[in-house]
Amino acid sequence: MAILIMLHTATPMLTDANLLRLLQLSSVSLPVGGFAFSQGLESSIELGWITSKADAFDALSVQLTEGLGRLDLPVLQRAMLSANKPDLIALNHWNDLALACRETEELRLTDTAMGKALARLLRSLNIEVPFAPTEPLSFVIAYAVAASHWKIPFHSAALGFSWAWLENQVAAATKLVPLGQTDAQRLLGELQPLIPDAIEQAGTLDDDNIGACLPALAIASCYHETQYSRLFRS
Image (cartoon, rainbow, N blue to C red; front, side):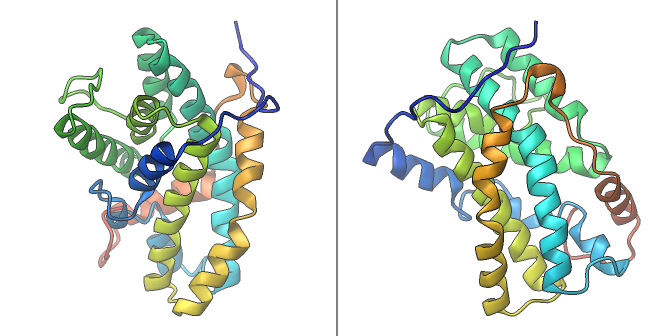
């Protein structure tokens, strides 16, 4: 049965300890390799689809609202609930769904490479990850395990997850479009207000409506697989 999870209830307080762990989990220095993946952005620029800050805003805003807001964030919410119980069957289900929704080999590689790296880091910190090291693991599921272990409330975890994604994407755009540092900061400022909206949307979706369809992103990712010269792995 589909379950509707709303976010209009009182948000648990974020303690100083929780906040510091969230900052650690969302930091660009977290060794998960997010900087190595452009997620289709590099080929979009090579193809001439993105040539300016305005184009980058359009592309990233759609990915944020229609990608993260409809797939990653609702899966994060459910995975955190599953990890808290714990319900390993449900956690495996959400991992399978997240990976099934990656529309190209490169997008799946991005997800599993970052998931494997985060799981390895968590194990080194003596945090149990209920997946074998050889199993494909979505980054969003590994992130949920960490957030659950450190007792970070969902809303705060979702802010951190979205911010980390956005910062990596804008960093890639800064190198590729290219953007100056000031324009990059303006772009971050323009996109930030969309994050709370994406989180709120995630809380209104029932299980059957979780999923994303971004054809241009999938096409760009496919082109990237055979792009002659590239800076990013995907």
